[in-house]
Image 1 (cartoon, one colour):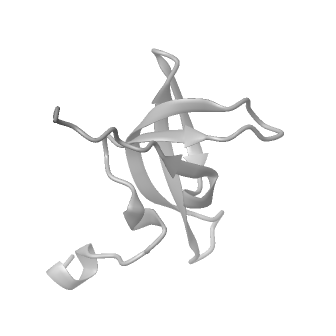
Image 2 (cartoon, helix red, strand yellow):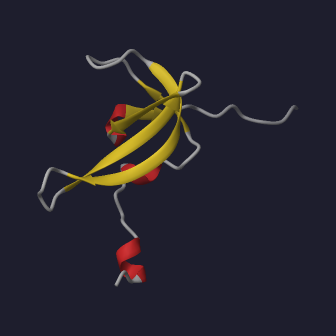
Length: 85
């Protein structure tokens, strides 16, 4: 049975992100730089071990979905200050 204590995970780097956040994935050997929207946050089991690693899924370029990002792979897009003076 899953209790309330088992449902809350404190992974500080992962907890910086929420579904719907706009983020930037900087260019690396695997992809060019792009902006996207967080559509999934999960912990994936590393092979058949007891270890879990964070995985963030992004929607980008209109209809592309890419997963497997670690929290350090992404940065939040600065939100513009609202309201006119």
